[in-house]
Length: 357
Ligand code: ATP
Ligand code: MG
Ligand code: MG
Image (cartoon, rainbow, N blue to C red; front, side, top):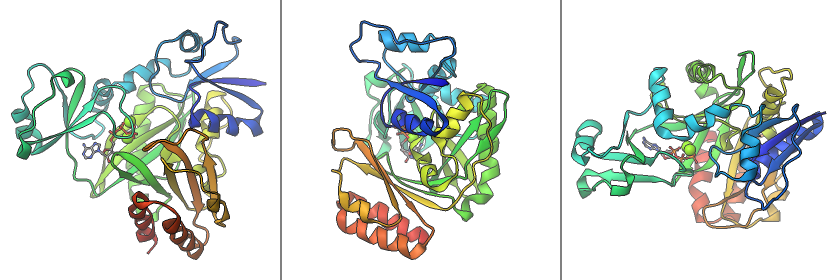
């Protein structure tokens, strides 16, 4: 049948493989740094996708990225560099935080003058989970680090009300479909929890779909893409794009009839696409730098996805999807988790409770 190779072998690749199984799509994540003298047995009918935005050159990454069916090939470089990604948003007139490239002549004082007393520097490439960011603060007379010039952009600090994301898909023929907007809580730059769908976000859905459609069309994108946004009042500003399945879409594994992983595979394999049916509201709690706790499995409404990675501080090692079919049961589960989980989870768990309070 169909075979899809994934550039990268992290949790997203593993969840793609899992989603391929019922459709008899043979999904093969590849550790591109694995020592290998042999080539992968790729055929002309195989399809190649990626679970990461960037990758080092290696014999295996070259073999995959040079294949004639490496889908979205040119998109990765364009979106992996914040300079070209933000330029794309400006070109399409998609609202985003005001920004500029940090070059040899940029003066911190000019940035404060243009953007305000706090300015966020973001490395052009390689940043994730809030790594690769540096705040310039006028009050502290911060100066621009020399090695960030030409390697970073400067962005206005956005006093957003909250963060949301849209996960959508585009077919080769240009049809687009979307999940409902997801509400996201980040702590220290890393996603802690998501809730979707939410009736109160519905008024923003059309604006978000228009933005992501125009981006996917411009890129002639095929597959699932995620768009992270700031909600400021009744409008959205795009924070960043991810040309892949996304952490804020993990709730779809529990809450919909077709999760983001299957949706991506269907688009790649040119199988029928549609708006996924939402079965119930879900909460996703990311498991970050903590050991597996089998008590989580006793929660009646929870599904655990454990990535089986070495646990290190700040590292995503799993997630819990909780259904909100029964609000009292959700409250019980969140209260339980508060007792079982360390300090850094208290605020995100309270944030979930507040949404249902
Ligand atoms: P990811 O893991 O999502 O790829 P990242 O390291 O690429 O993250 P961003 O998503 O750009 O970085 O930023 C991480 C978080 O930092 C955002 O989710 C948001 O909470 C905060 N942030 C980013 N840009 C701004 C901004 N301009 N103003 C205020 N907060 C911001
Ligand atoms: Mg990012
Ligand atoms: Mg982000």
